[in-house]
Image (tube, rainbow, N blue to C red; front, side, top):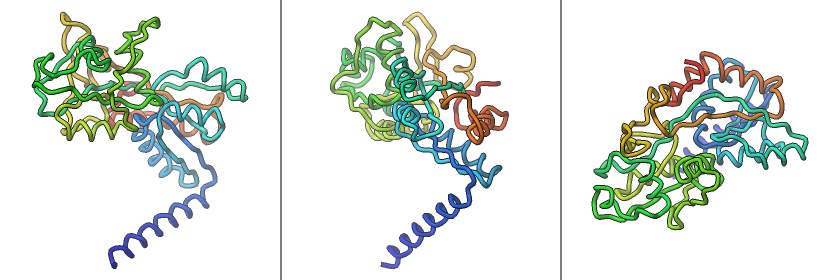
Length: 286
């Protein structure tokens, strides 16, 4: 019972602290979108608020699609996106009087990961596409154990899901109709994929390389069988040898103004780009 009251008291204090901070904030900015970018943007927000104690930045995930939808509907000030905005999203935004403005704030290497107990450590783009489309169903087909492959994917609202489908499954072919296998398990976040891979020796998934830990094994990837197998590291993304990398964006309604501009300027400053590097992404400026 004492523990229960202690937990309740802690929650009340946390809520009151949050409310007090909010009440004293002269400005508040809502940032929503890409789960890949949540940790990075939260780190920016924390440092920004230390330097600007009268400002408050609220950061929530939900996926790139969610962030862009929120920007279009006017329920957030900045959208985080791990893909470019689509033409249909721009058209919808314009109908609502919103003018999406794209700002590139970093780069990300997209890692394909398996459980550390899985002997498979390198794959070609074709093999990865074969796994996720369901053409390759057993690890023994790839030199692994005689176990059925468990496919993990982000859900369709995720920019990571879209990027992976367009660049890996469809190999940048706009005429391709390749889709994820129906048996693929669609998970709500990169962390959910990381946790499932850590506990399932048959699983394979993908996410931004900032989520890699000792509980997952990143796969070295080659464009084809004659190419070099390259691991997902910051250096390999910077030098262009890692074949699965992508830009990271913030979107605003028109040119950023006021506090939104202050946040964007901080993200693109040396300190902001040092945070990009510290969170295992690749800075725009080296």
